[in-house]
Length: 530
Image (cartoon, rainbow, N blue to C red):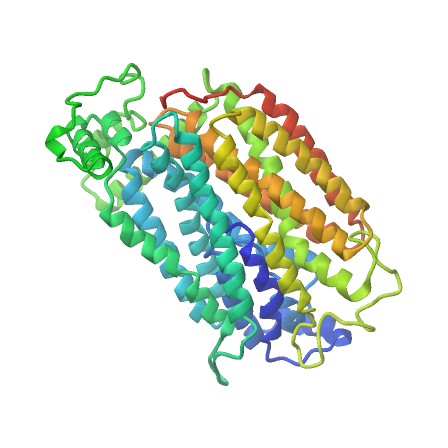
């Protein structure tokens, strides 16, 4: 669901109480910044942002709703929309570490539930700062599910089908994106909900709650599923691992568990991959203290130190080169994908109204002649943008299907290299084309090609790290990707109006560079997980 959240940029700007004309927007911004209460306009802003955090992997930007009510500049909207990425950075990193210590299944249940609860609360928030808090917390929950679910699935799959099945999981990310886009089209424009002087619960707030249902249902389903047998083996719990595999055998072969032929499992890398990320001296130090607060503090500091120590081990041989290359891959792909995807509705809406190309719009257009905000404080958004955004969401479908059928045959590296290079070339054409239709076509091509890179990276992250570091490694790389997303969002916000070509061409260069650098990655096709 990487790009569905962009719809909130469009609708939520409609649901403002304040009547602010374009000429008064600057003065209104000053009044807001000096007031003690944010007012109903900020209430709506806070709730709108919370919707972003419902999306897996992408809890995306939602700053546009505040533009009309608060008179925000593009740069201010960019800062506002980046908070959720901060939450995802924190969540992916530390949830990944916890999953390597406590198990994949347990962390998935807790993080998904945490995300859903915080998102529902955010839909009720009526003040700006409360909304920001729960948006951050919901982002932390989202960030936890992303690295862990891929580790969980990869550890259940045999090597000959692993790439395909991880790509299938990524495929359902795209399916969720399309469903969210369709729901946004159906729900957000409606006059549903309740609105009074002291409490607002309009249609986009309802949309927030609807988008929490996958998190809640997934948490319930994971409660019914077993722990990863690969994780159990490396924790030294071979008996439990065999019980899980026997259950899988019973389901797949339709035979009783006692007929499962495997009675013992040997691991060549067992000794080097045991879970030793927490030093044996840590617990003894903690339990010598009689002060509960001191014990909790020491325990927390010890775990934080263990997280950083394990992270540093990702940059040591034999993992050094693969980690450095994957860091660059995640940064460049996140910068390019989110930078373009988050600001696509803004570009398309401007082109629909004023004509011209993405970076060469008529200079005589202004907010006075065709303002972004109506006189009643609602957003002046061309409804065609909903349709165009839905089409771009569908454009990921061919790339997802292609990855599923090719990743275990052509190899991971060749797919990643070709995807990144072709994505960079398609971005160059976005800068060159002259009409809205041409821009939409090139964005669809970019989306269909770049999603192949995302899916292959999902596979490689699972395969290139040992079991005792896998979830943390994916969480760390997700953190790097979020940094790229934040920088891209801020760069587009600062430059999109005056220097549009700069961020777009930067995306093209980054994608091309990432494609060539991918040649240095090892190919794990057909090899067992460490």
